[in-house]
Amino acid sequence: MTDILSTGVSGLLAFQRGLATTSQNIANAATEGYSRQRIELDARDPRPFGSGFVGTGVDVTTIRRLLDQFAVNQWRASSSDLGRLSAYSELAGRVDDLLADPDGGLPATLQAFFAAWQEVANNPSSSTARQLLLSQAESVSDRFRATIQRIDQLEVDINGRLNARVTEVNSLATSIARLNADIESSSAAFNGQPPNDLMDERDRLILRLSELVNVTTVPDSGGALNVFIGNGQTLVLRDYAASLGTAPSALDAGRLDIVYRSTGLQQVVTQSITGGEIGGLLDVRREVFDPARQQLGLVAAVLGYSVNEQQAAGMDLNGRLGAAMFAVPPPQVAPAMTNAGSATASAAVTDFRALTGDDYVLRFDGAAWTVARAATGAAVTVTGSGSAADPLVFDGLSVAVGAGAAAGDRFTLRGTRDAAAGLAVALADPRSVAAAAPIRSAALAANLGTGSISAGEVVDAADPNLLATVDIRFLTPTTYSINGAGSFAYVPGGDIVVNGWRVQVSGAPLAGDTFRIERNAGGVGDNRNALAIARLQGGLLVGGGTATLGDALIGTIGQVGTQANRSGVALAAQQTIQSSARDAVLSVSGVNLDEEAADLLKWQRAYQAAAQTITVADTLFQTLLAATSRR
Image (cartoon, helix red, strand yellow):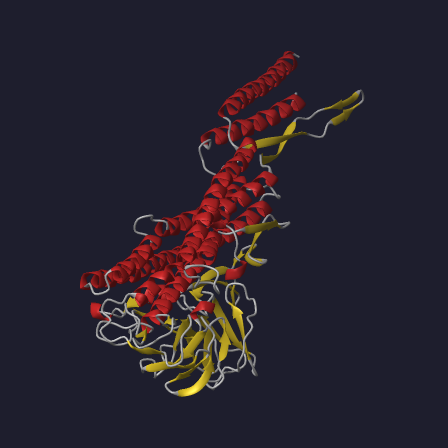
C-alpha cells in the first residue's frame, strides 16, 4: 500500500503542477511577450522485485517555455528592419511632400522668375514689369529659404528623437542586465531550473531594443544573455550595462553623433549603428536630408551667381552697369572641435559652373593639406598649397588657410550648402534692373560698302574701358584699325574683342568705312541683357555644364521622391515579413485557449484518477488494519 500511496501522491502533485501551469497559460493568454509553458514529466526509478520492476511514480523535471529560438531571432531582425524603414519612410515622405508641391514648389517659382525676366524683355522701360521681377526674385529666395528651414526643422526633430531613443536604449540595457542577474541567481537557487517569466520579460525588452537598433545576442552558460550592437560593441554583458549617448559632431556642432560609453571609454559609433529607428534616423539624415540641402544650395548659388554675372554685363535705367541682383552666402569653413592648432580658413567661389554642391573635409598631415568629400571620403584633386598667395583650388572653390595648423587638424567646407538658406535679393530699385546691354554698335552713315556689324556682347564686365568709344575703321577692304591704331586682317564674321566686349563685322566693307562701338546712353528700350538673363533658364549651368537650373531642381525632387517611394514599398513588404515572423513565434509560443482547455480537462481527469489511487490505497490499508485487529 505504501508504494501505491507514494505513486498516487506523486501523480497527484505532478498533475497539480499541470493544472497550475495550464491555469497560468490561460491567465496570460493576452499578455504581451508571454510564452506558454508546459510541464516535463519523467517516471521515477522503478524498484526491482523478483518477478521484475515496479514503477514508483512520476516527477516534474521542469516547466519549459515553448519557444523556437530561430523564429525569435528572425522576429527581432525583422523588427529592427521595420523600425528603420518606418522612421526612414516617414521622414523621406515629409521631404518629398515639401519639394514636390506642383503649384508652390521651387520649380514653379523658378519658372515664374524667368517668366518675369521675359516680361521685362518685352517691355524694358516698364516700371511695373521691373517691380514684378523684383517681387518674383523675392519669391524665389523666400521659397529656397522656407524649404531649407523646413528641412532644418526636421533635423531638429531627428536630434530630439535620437536623444529620446538613446535614453530608452540605456533604460532597456539596464533592465536587461538586471534581469540577467535575477535569472542567474534564481536558476542557481533552484538547481538550474529556468525562471520562465523573467526570461519572457527579458525577451520582450530585447525585442523592443531591436526596434530601436540592430542587436546581436549571445547566451552564456549561466543563463545570461549578452547583447551587442554596432561593430560588436558590448551593450549588455551579464549584469553589466554599457550606455549610449549623443554629442555634437566634431565637424558639425548642429548635428548629433551617437557615442558609446563603457568603463571610462567614449567612442563615436554613428557610422556603425544600423537598423532600428535610430539607424533609420541616421540613414535618412545622411541619404535624404544632406543631398537635398546640398543640391538645393547648389541650384540657389548657381542661380545667384549666374544672374549677378549677367546683370553686371548689362546697363540699368540710370545708365550704370548692373549691380548684383542676389546676395549669395560665401562658402563656409569651420574648424573641427578637436583641432589642436590655431589656424583659421576662408573660402571663395572661383567658378560657379564647376561647383558640385558637395561638402568637403580638409585635413592637415603636418606638411600638406588634403581634401576629401565629406559624404564618401573620396579624395579630391587639389592644386595650391593653401596659403593666401597660393590657395587650395578645386571644384570651383578656393581655400586659404592661415598659419598655426597642427598635424591632424581638420576643417569642414560647405561650398554651397548654405546658399539656399541665405539667398537674398540685393536690388531694391526697379530702375537698377539691367535690361539693356551697356554698349551699342553702328555703321556710320558715310560708309559705302555693304559691311554690317553685330550688336555686340560683353565678355568681361570688369574691364575698365568697357564703355569707352571705339571706332573700327577699314584701311582696305581686308584690313582695319582700332581707334587709329594697328592694322588687323579682316575675317568676315570673325570675333573682334576689345575692352571687354566682342563684335563681328560681316559683308564687304570698303576702305574708309567705319563702325562705332560706344556706351549705350539712353537705351531705355534695349532688352538685350534681359533676354540674355531669360535665356539662363535653358543654359547648362549646373554640374559642370551638364544640367539646367530646372533640370537640377527636378533631379533633386525626383531623387527624393524615388527614395521616399522605394522606402514606402520596402516598408509595406517589411510589415508583411515582420508579421510573418511574429506569427511564426506565436504559433509555437502563443497561448491557444482551445488547446489549454483540452489540457485543463486532461490534467483534471488525471488529478481525479491519482486521487482515486490514493483512495484505493487508503481502503486497502484500512482493510488490512481491520483484518489484523480481528486477530
